Each structure stands twice: as structure tokens, then as C-alpha cells.
Amino acid sequence: MSVTEQPAPQPGQGPAGDADGDAAAAQLRDRISADSLTTRRDYLRIVATVSGGLAIGGVGVAAGILHRHGDSEHLPEPKKVTDALAPGQSVAFRFPGDEDRALAVRLADGSLVGYSAVCTHLACAVLWREDRGSEGELYCPCHEGVFDARTGEVTAGPPPRPLPRIFLTERADGSVWAIATARSGETAKDALCRQFGDSRPEAARRLGCPGTAGATESRRT
Ligand code: FES
Image (cartoon, rainbow, N blue to C red; front, side):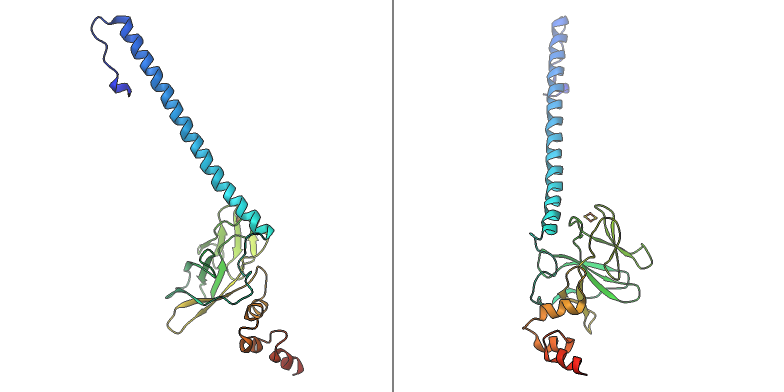
């Protein structure tokens, strides 16, 4: 019953009617306080769940329990990222798995770069900010982490490692494809050699991966 539903005092009701009205108003205040408490409790529970999930994700990544970008020893299937990407623009995608958040960016000079969009600090989502720095930057809003757009190196904030690279290629029709991943700080050659493994011996040989005929020949010449 709301205040507006309280029965109006009847003529002659006098002090007794006032007492009833006061009691109803007191009940109403109690109910509103109880509702506020419930809402506040729910809010705190939601906040705790979200921040708890975030912390567990970050600790899991740090402890190596959850998998990280580039952990696979096998070359992933190439995946189309977008039909086209203009300078200064970025596009979010998933690679190599459907759960792996990633970002592709076309820098102002036309270079294509790709990174895991999972911050190396506590696994928040990394965003592209075109209007920052000399050529844009990758930014994590959780604790103000900043990564260099061209290299993925940490330039500010608490992230302990660079963003893992995702190797992109552009086809003649302008479409952008993701083809491989690297671990944080791993060179492109080491990453590709690791993932080519036995499945692409010709490509591994051309890259001069250790243990391939090409690597032996290139050492001889
Ligand atoms: S999670 Fe990115 S800076 Fe902390």
C-alpha cells in the first residue's frame, strides 16, 4: 500500500485516525528501507562477482592455469578478420579460438598490426585509441595500462609484458586475415617456427627454422 492509498481520516476520527496514518507511514518507511537494503546488497554482490571474476582471470593467466594467446604449438587455421581496414581504424575479432579477444589495427602509414586484446596485467580488454601519441595507442582502462601501437611493448601502467602479437596478412582484395600468434615478447620467426612444426616443413625451411634443411644450408653459405 502506498502513501496515496492510505484511507483518508473520517470526520470525527480525530487522534485515532492520525495514529493509523502515522502507523501506515512508518510501515511504508520500513518497507522502503528494506527494499533499499536489498538493492544495495544485490549491487555489492554483482560488484564482487565481477571484480572476483576479473581477479581470478588475471591470476589464472599469471599462474599459467588459463591458456594465453600463442600457447598452441600448432598453426591455427587462417581466419578472415575483415573485408577492409582503413588507416587509423581498428577492428575487434577472435583468434585463434572463439574466446580469444584480439585487435587488428591499420596504422596511419598503412602498416597492419594485430595483438591479443587481453591485457597482460589482469586480463581486461584492451582498446584502440587513434588520437593518442604519435600514431595511436593500445589502452587498458582498468589500471591505465598503455601499449605501443607498433610493437605492443608496455609504455605506461602496470602491465608486466608486451601484448602477444597476432600475425596478419592482407589479400589482393583488401581483406585482412589472421594467420598465426606469438607469445608475449616472442620474435615472429621463433613463433612461426614453433607453430609450423612438422606440419609445414617447406615453409619452415624457407624461414630457416632451426633443424630444417634450409637452416643448415643458410648456415653453410
Ligand atoms: S588489467 Fe590492464 S592495466 Fe590492469
